[in-house]
Length: 49
Image 1 (cartoon, rainbow, N blue to C red):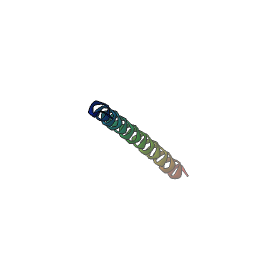
Image 2 (cartoon, one colour; image 1 turned 180 degrees about the horizontal axis):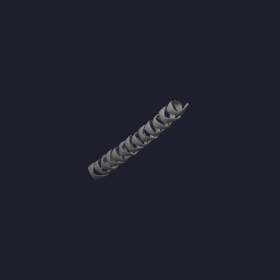
Image 3 (cartoon, rainbow, N blue to C red; image 1 turned 90 degrees about the horizontal axis):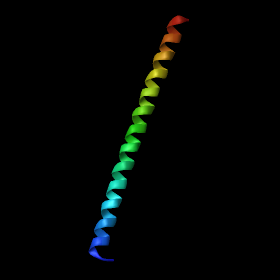
Image 4 (cartoon, helix red, strand yellow; image 1 turned 135 degrees about the horizontal axis):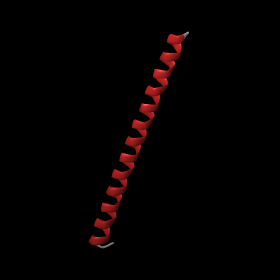
């Protein structure tokens, strides 16, 4: 494999890895927000009982 091809492959792998990391981070934030909403609704329902 030439140096150019090796460097190109490494660069593409690094970019894909970074994109995947950001996607997982975003999903984690969405799940956390959903959990907070559910927690708030549960507390509200419990206080109404």
